[in-house]
Every structure is written in C-alpha cells, then in structure tokens.
Length: 167
Image 1 (cartoon, rainbow, N blue to C red):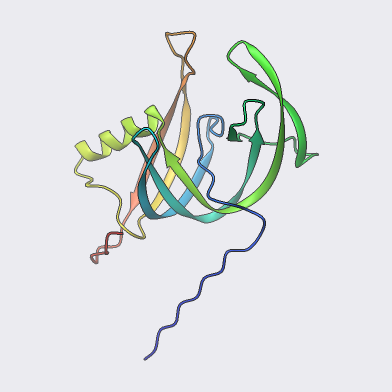
Image 2 (cartoon, rainbow, N blue to C red):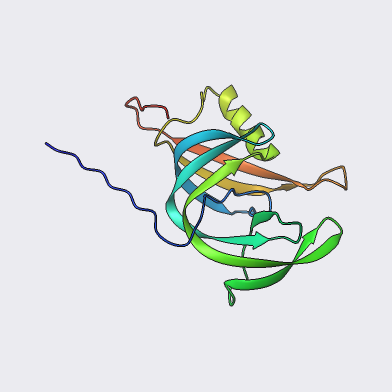
C-alpha cells in the first residue's frame, strides 16, 4: 500500500501570524494541530500550529514600522485604516484581513503561565499533531499603568495514545 502526501500554500499570506495580545479578546478561541516550537529574537518561545478551523486575522502596519495582528477588522471593511489605542495614545494604522491556515502563539505571560500549569499536571510539552484549543478567558489588569493588561487563557491538548514523533 502506498501513501502519498502533498502540500501547497496558497494566497498572498507571507509568513505565519503570531497571535499577540492585540489579537485576543474574551471568549476568542482558536484550534490547531501542533507543528513546531522555535525561539524568537530575545529568547521568547513561540509555538506554530496548523489551524484546524481556518480563521480571519487582521494584520496591521503601525507607524513605528512594526506589524501586529489585531482582534478584528470592522465587519463592513476588511481592509483600510483604523484608530488603535496604544497606552494613552491613539494612532491610525493600515490593516488587511485574510484567512489563515497557520498561526503561532507564545511570548505572552498568560500563555506561559498556563503552559506552566499544564507542566505541573504532567504535560511534558507539545508533540507533533497534538490538537490544541486555546481560549482567551479575559484580561487581568496590570498594576503598572505603563504595562498592558495580561491576557488570560485556557489551553486544552488532545493527543492520540499512539506515540507521535517530536519535530
């Protein structure tokens, strides 16, 4: 019996969006199959997933040259400009909305805390093809007004009982 595998990335998407704090809002949920973990500049751990249920992301270009994924674009206008609150300032950013089949998560304190909680319960890290559901449960206000609120999460991992290879 022969098995064949094929893959093709389509669309205008370049790279995999990292779902940072700006993306997450109460009850926002994404589901993915784990692909790999990598270390970002600054030593931050980031996890890559294939979306089990593809979803829209809004990619915004900020005046300082940085790019971030936002929570949502206005429903009536998938591309354009929008005002975004950064600390005490409001800035206008250009954005484009597209459907993604891949995403990355990490470098968020609340996500790391939930990964630590999973480790305490015996979870020894993601394995190839783990099915992961990440749910934003809210935001915890920062005591330091110069810092963003911490996004809080629930992370659920489903793994087949047969051993999987680690990537």
